[in-house]
Image (cartoon, rainbow, N blue to C red; front, side, top):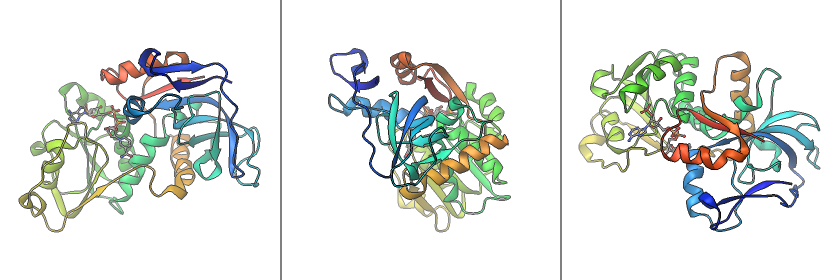
Length: 304
Ligand SMILES: NC(=O)c1ccc[n+]([C@@H]2O[C@H](COP(=O)([O-])OP(=O)(O)OC[C@H]3O[C@@H](n4cnc5c(N)ncnc54)[C@H](OP(=O)(O)O)[C@@H]3O)[C@@H](O)[C@H]2O)c1
């Protein structure tokens, strides 16, 4: 089968291996025929540091071609969305059955492949805020892959959502995604946020502390704006703030169930993945270049 593999001698350190070994599934793994895969900013960084012969790819959508031997998970022919540790930029990949979810016919493979890392990060960040009905939520890096999901999920949870954008041209995009208020400067927002989902880091994270509600939470998952320096004055600017360093993979055992939540919201129309770039998987290097140059707004999804 065909599968991407790292090769320092190839353009962008990546080569399409035409004779890759078929996946060898563990008893709790199904084999999927990959129809579409998502590309994440984190994978750009991983590609730069991994050795030769590493197979990238975590976000996939496709069809079960071999069911798990232990009897768990869906049967052959079921369309699924899945999150794997690697090897997703391939024609076929093995995936533990607790990391996949069946797809409704209404959900395209392209939309599904946009969900895993960005959607799980947003969903799990929002859960850090508890019940958000009627609460104020701030979403930074608002028009990014994660931010657009955070805005939509916070709205679906009944929150009043403020989007913080880093450039004026993102304002209309953040509004189109569903933010109630869009600001380029935190001083212009309503403040009193029960929850901040933060992909910006840098001074944005420090400033966000000053705009939290008492006992508010910052779920920080990215640092597009660089390092953050915090002093005691920042940490004591509201009563008992909480900062959670959030990784999409935690908790690990319920990734499939949470993908099911996200896919269900897409099926019902409550969540619409914003896809900034689609194409054939042979164009993966162009897609990586576009991401590295910040030319893509929203998710990158390629089809096999
Ligand atoms: N912890 C985890 O598990 C996890 C999971 C997924 C992603 N991440 C990380 O989270 C970050 C965002 O990921 P993503 O997939 O959403 O990336 P993305 O799609 O590239 O979006 C990033 C967004 O950040 C904003 N931005 C860009 N430069 C900025 C700056 N200098 N200061 C403030 N904001 C800036 C822009 O939104 P605006 O124009 O709206 O400001 C941009 O759309 C990345 O660092 C990624 O590696 C971590």
